[in-house]
Image 1 (cartoon, rainbow, N blue to C red):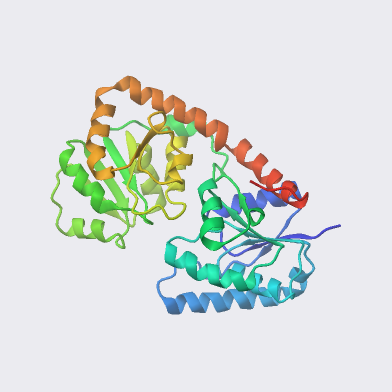
Image 2 (image 1 turned 135 degrees about the vertical axis):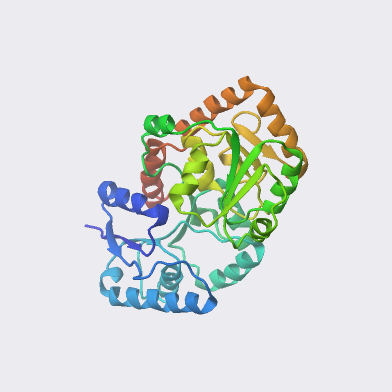
Length: 347
C-alpha cells in the first residue's frame, strides 16, 4: 500500500484540510510543529527557525523517505524538502507544496532563480487562487502541470444559520487585515464620507499607526493588534467591509472576504485579481479601479439604495454556496489529488 504523508509545520488555516486528507484520502500526518509558533520578528529568528525545521525533518527522515506522496504544510521545511528531493534523498511520486504563496515581484524573482536549480518533475505547488496559478507560471517559469489550484473556502464547515443569526447589520463600515493594505488611501477617501468606519490592523501598518497618534476624523476609529475574536466581532457587526490594497502581486484578503461572505457582508475592494474570484463587481460587491476616488460614491449608493444592498447579500450567498462552501472545496480537494495522480492537470 502506498504511504502518503503530510508534514505539518504550521497550523493556522491548514489543520482542517490536513485532517480531511487523513480521514478521506488515506494520508498520515507527521507532526513537525515547532515548540514556539510566535511570528517571525527578525532575519535572525527566521534563520533560527529554518534550522530548527530542518533538524525536525532530519529526525524523521527515515519515515519521510518511504513516502510515495508528500504534502508539505509549512515554510522553511518545504524548501528544505525541495532541496532533498532534487538531491534524490527524497523520491516520492508526488511532492506537494501546500499553500504556496510568494508576494511581490522581487521575492518571486529570487525564488524563480532558486527553483530553476531545484525544480523536479514530481514537484507540485498548490495555490489558493486561480490568478496565482497563472501568475507563477508567467513570472517564475513554472510549467502548468506543476501549479495546482485549490479554492480557499470554508474549511471550518461553519454553521451558517447560527453565524448569520449572531451577526448584525450595524451602522458602521469595517476594514481590517495586515498584509498588502493601503490604509492611507482608505483614510483619505473617508475624509469625504460621513459614515462610521472601524479599522483593525497592526502597528506595522504605518498609516494606521500614524493615525492613532494624531486622529483627525471623528467618523474613523482605528484599533491595532486586537485578538481574533475582537476582529471577528467588529466584522460581524458591520454593514459592509472595505478592503484597500496596495498592489496586485498575489493572493491578498481572501480570509477577510470569506468571513464576510459567511456572515453576509458585501465587500468593497480595490480591484486585484485575487478579489475578483470572491467578488462579482456590481452584483455581490464592488471592485474599484480608482479606490480613493470611487469609494465615496459607492458608499453613498449603498446608503441610498436598500434594494441594491439586499440584492448583493443574496447574490453573495449564492456565490459562496456554489464556490467556497465546505462541500464544494472538500470535493475539489479530493479531486485535485486524484486528477494529479491520474496524470491530469489539477486546475
